[in-house]
Length: 331
Image 1 (cartoon, helix red, strand yellow):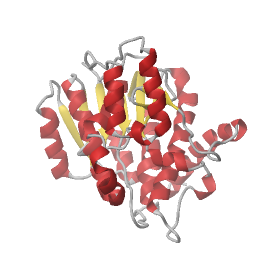
Image 2 (tube, one colour):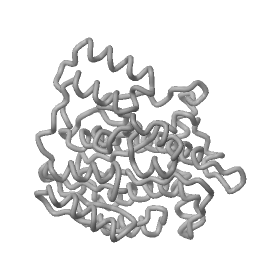
Image 3 (cartoon, one colour):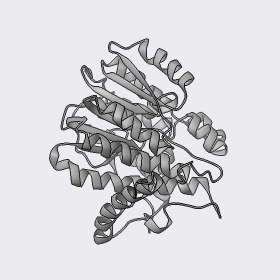
Image 4 (cartoon, one colour):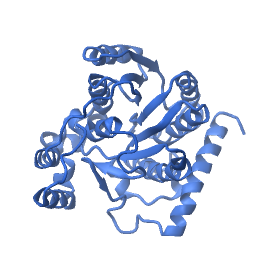
């Protein structure tokens, strides 16, 4: 799951380009199988000694990542909402682990709990932080802190956890932060004024896509601000994978595409590849899909011009800071 044999053949590059242009073939299991075979993907040598935190680790992509990374020798921290599911995940991951597997109960829709998680994790020296937890709701749900749930889980909690770990010097030199994104973000143009949806006209898929688009802007901000101090920030699009989030959040899509969806292991592959890569590799600040850097925009009208995008980097970070403070009554 790590290093590709180099150089990739011209035929493999051509196949990748054709797959990427079709979207459906690229995002399904077919794209994964073709690329992995033509490019002769290999397993990483190991992740021995690395401390890796995976949120949303009790099922789907998160559990697949945690199991594979533990097999590679990492000391894995699992983050999830349910003690029962965390214990099940711990047993699954521990069965092949050579290092300790630690669990943390935290509902990432709660910024207070996220702050408490950051305090616990600040005792560690973290090499990789994987933001994988997700929520795709059918109806508007407000958290106890007054935040729309999708936005809290996908944007505000990752912002708070990352910033607090950086402030506490809990991220190791050359640590990397990996955020799992989604194809839904391709449908949205970043707009801070419409980022947080209210109950009127609420559409769960739109709220999800807007949060994921904002996540790409935040990732660019982090790379620009913290990259010079050797931290690396990556986005990963896992493709369309057969996970509880897909089957429960968009059941119609899951039913239609079911035979073509990727397995959780296939969807987790690029995140594992990044987490186990050598320090400083590959180039940070990019979106990755099937071990290749990809475009952040596919549809016309979703791209900001250079000046607006630079402004958006600062605006989204400031907005997150203020929104978290308001939710926690810190302002």
